[in-house]
Image (cartoon, rainbow, N blue to C red; front, side, top):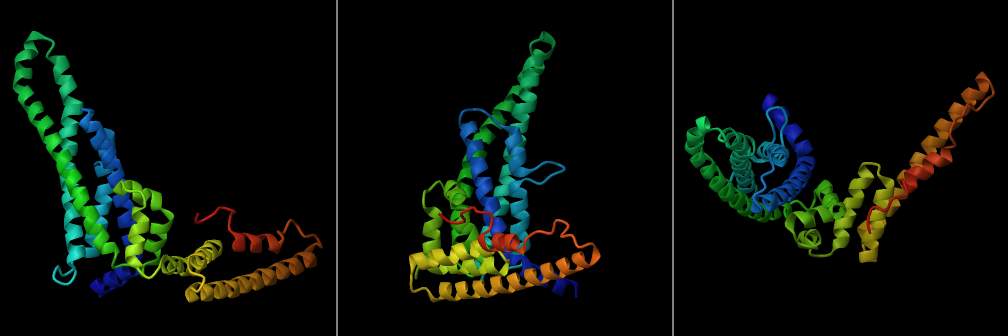
Length: 302
C-alpha cells in the first residue's frame, strides 16, 4: 500500500519535478561556468562551491538535482528508458565529482594560507615542507576535476536534451522553455538553443507549444497568461484550431468567474446594507474581473 501511494504521488508530481530538473541543471551549469572561469585564473571560490554542492546543513543545486533525478528514475528499466537512466547516472556522477572539487578547494582556500603564514617561523618551516606536497596534489586534482566536470556537464546536457524531447506533453516544462529561454540559452552557451529545442519537440510548428502552454495556464487559472499563449499561437499559425478553441474556453471561464464575483459582491452588498447601510469599503467587482482578465500588466511573451 505504501509503495502504491508513493507511486501515485510521484506520477502526480512528475511534470513539476522534471521542470525542476531542467531549472536546477541550468542554474548549476551557469554557476559552475563561473567557478571554472575563476579556477582557470587560479582563484578558487569556496562559497560558490557550497552553493553548487551544499553544506552540512543545506543542500546545494547539484545535491537537489541529484535527489530529484534519483526520485524520478532510480527504478527505471535501462532497457526501456535508457535516456532517463543515463541522465540519472550522469547527474549523480556530476554531484560526486563536484564534492571532490569542493574538498580540494577547501584545502587550498582554508589551510594553505594558514600553513604558509605559520611557516614564516623557523620552527614550522620543516612542517610546511612536508605539507607542500599535499597542496601541490590538491592543486593538480582541482584542475583535473574542473576539466572533468566541464565534460560531464556537456554530456549531461546532451542527455538532458534527449529526455526533454520525449516530454512535449508536459505543459510545465513547455512553459519553462518558453518563458525562461534566456536562462536556458545561457546554460547551454548558445543563443536560440531553447527555441531550437522547442522546434525539435514540435516539428509541425511552435504554435503547438504555445497551445500546450496556454492550456496549462488555463488549468491553473492564469487567464492573462493563457490569452497571451493562445494569441501567440495564432500569430505563428492563424489556422491553429487548438488556439481558437482555447480562446473560446477562456472566454467561458472568464464569464463564469465574472458571474461568481458579481453574485458574491451583490450578496455582500445586500448584507452590508442590511446591517448599517454603508458599503464599508467593499471593492468594485469590475476591478477584480479586470485583474483576472488582464493580469498585472506585464507581458508574458515577447
